[in-house]
Image (tube, rainbow, N blue to C red; front, side, top):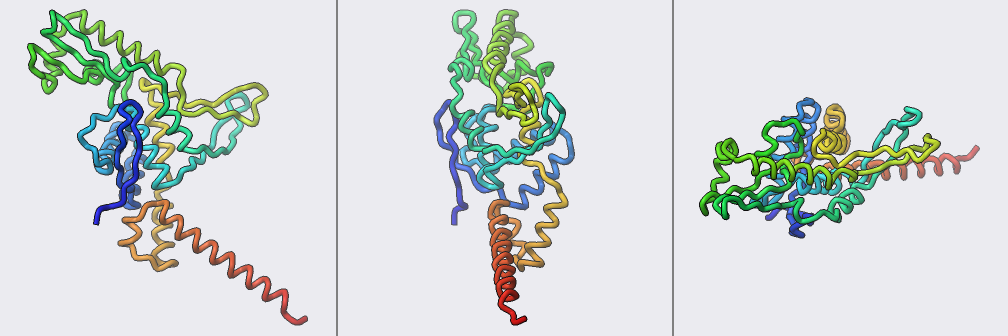
Length: 291
């Protein structure tokens, strides 16, 4: 039987991607990588998650596509609500708030970006050299990264031959005009995202309109940090949950490891409701006891 899938729509292509469920055991291993604290390892872990759970592996996902896919996985398989503890920028006091992940996804899917941000095609030497520059696909790109040009180049055609597979060698021989066009695209790309944010929160302690924002800036670690916040949890909580479900609710571990975290929370809520009903009946019984 085919595994259950759900869908997400990518912003530019308007293409629907089928996504398989994030199972509890896989989520636990993802959290282990996040807690390891190595951003390169964490980025690869997120990329592997997308490769494994998305059925359309032939699509070249941009960083924006990946962000939308990962937030959709978080919303469907873990929880649609993100609980945050934030520092007020004015008073430095902490406050708790809840954010609907679907609101962030909707915002990302409806960004009014020019087509040139997604892909810009440049012709050189009467068409002998064609360079397609586009939105990067990495979630963790630094502006000072020396391979930045390599990251933004999607395709190179030389004398009608696709030489993208050896683009690192080709880039070394690019004329100045090509490198300038690539740098201009990167500046254009950065400007397009400059004033955009993943979310904005108003502090209850601020006397002025002092918003806490998470910028949608590829050339900082804000995106990967935000994803870490979305998926991170205490590793001990996994073992406590496994123990509770297995020893208190008698759920076999084979079922636990393939269920989504959201499904396991349903079992816990059933248990809480049952306990609350038992306590309610017990209180009612005690009230009716003869004095």
